[in-house]
Length: 192
Ligand code: 5GP
Image (cartoon, rainbow, N blue to C red; front, side, top):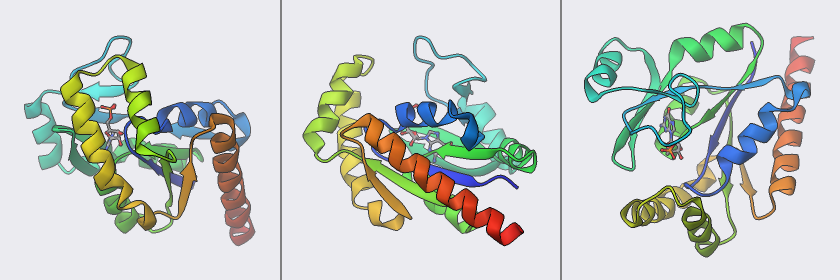
């Protein structure tokens, strides 16, 4: 079984950028899980690649069929991790990365106690706000909602196995890379 890695952190913390850098490192053998969501598709996002974009009704029937490993409402929209996808990739030996919110992280830790969880943050809320504004894809309302949400998420950072400050992207990536490699070494010791 490949390892299960949870990455959480406020919107704007840079977790998605970090994860795409980690996925590009062949020695880590990682894949990012593709979640389902009811939020509208942003420019440049493709269905089935970034997310599976669903209607409320489609999402609800997936909940009813028990297809989600966890799901949560984030920034007023529903997001869920598709159980079959994660299990399949892990069985094939891939490490699977879940980029999910703190509620989802809690649910996954309960279901998969072996999961390694990492909380990514910036050293201040000001840096976070700057990054959200640089994105230019969010409305003022959405930025304010994401900042309010960030405060709530930061308050739960201590629930995670690791906390990584991402003020410097290269450093944050290097730090998480070594966390993953340490865990891989531990797992193979126990397996052998
Ligand atoms: P965005 O709308 O910017 O793509 O994602 C917003 C937030 O939703 C992300 O910061 C991430 O933490 C959370 N998220 C994305 N997918 C999932 C999921 O499958 N489950 C949960 N619980 N949260 C998710």
